[in-house]
Image 1 (cartoon, rainbow, N blue to C red):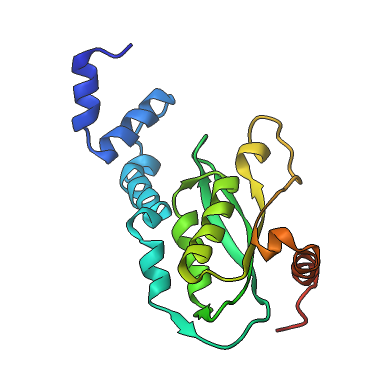
Image 2: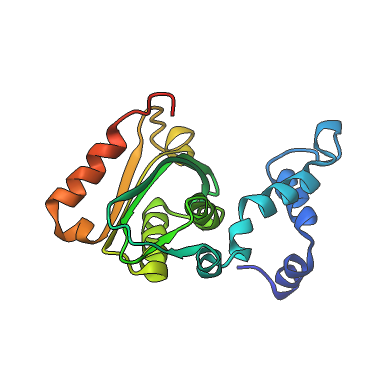
Length: 199
């Protein structure tokens, strides 16, 4: 158990000082040439990788809602995603496929990748990320239904633990008609499996 003095020291330490301490505990010399600026670089990198905490997904979507009499499926697929696993702070990455069926309103297409970025640039688990994207869209425009599928590879599985290099994880969140209607869900899953022909 940490002493009160040690806890206070860690609390008042800068991010860079904490990274230097980590390097020392790993058996490295933070003063050697290749590591002198590593604490600074790590801080900048981590602040970028978790910048999604500063973004408000609801505000993001409110800026691009449009009233449209369109009621067929809208799909944005193959959106690249990078995130950090909250268990090991190691990356997981892959593609996100999003679909919804409007109920009077649509979202500007560019906002869906932005929404994915907002949630993925936080410490995450893939299951929660999938659900957050679907629920944010459901809340913003109350469509007939939303479907989200994420296919990702996790470095915590590839570099450590079981060390399986070619495994991937697939998660889905189906709301509304995507959950209740087999035909709708099947159409979505079929369309995201199709490869684009130079589009």
